[in-house]
Length: 316
Image 1: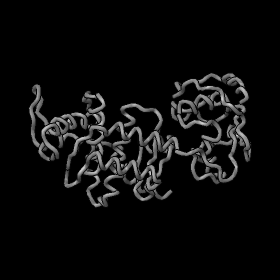
Image 2 (image 1 turned 180 degrees about the vertical axis):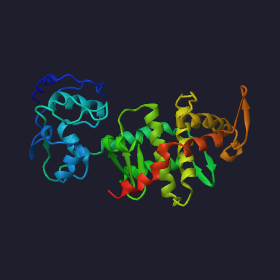
Image 3 (image 1 turned 120 degrees about the vertical axis):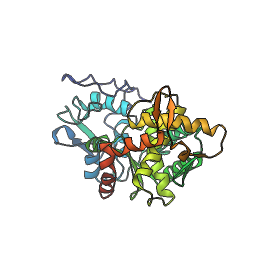
Image 4 (image 1 turned 45 degrees about the vertical axis):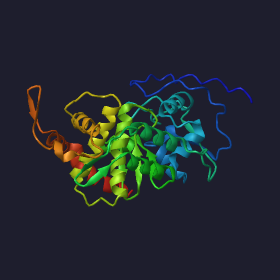
């Protein structure tokens, strides 16, 4: 096999942000062959991976990314964008945009080209979800049951394509969301599915709960209850992963309640979350952990707009 050419030097333009990036090996072939077109994204205002994929009739944006760089790790993608495409600006302070890049060229795969299987994105997301719920307890709230088996059903749906995966940080930035599950189109919109951190795994658990409720035909439950169960589940994943810090944001409040649920699960096969809907006193603080989390969610600006936004996105 011929030796890969050296990695091109970085562009001379300075970058004024800290990209989510790590050094990656030189690409074995550049440009990738055979390509359908060499597209100058640096000269197209507003161009991003998704708009290019849509414009060239590529249904899955990850096929376009993989064709160019043979990876689906956002950190490696940023490295290749910087070195091979000459990207130096950002729209979100984490990832390179195509704007004013030089030479600013990406390559379009042949019609019908698909990246190898198994899909690396599917594999990573399923693995992250498995780690997050490995020791997940069985709880019920407002007659909605959540346990490890439900998350495994979500993983199966992802593997079989019943639930789709979309990587679109620009879209999530526009709506101020970390991730979204869209029930009408049965797909997750993810921000950074390849950085395997505790928070990203917990965020995946949060959205997986919305899929669980959807798969159970539970869209009739109140939106606040749906979101409460999702935050509690994310808090459980965070606590099981070693995060015991109780901040005042919704995830922190969820971790505090999660601690109680996990403690109760050590002696109970099924934990009724309603039993914690009462006043507790701890270290001089008087609080109701269920009410505190519900009120935190209810008054969160992101929550107020979130579900309207999900329906709107489902129509795209």
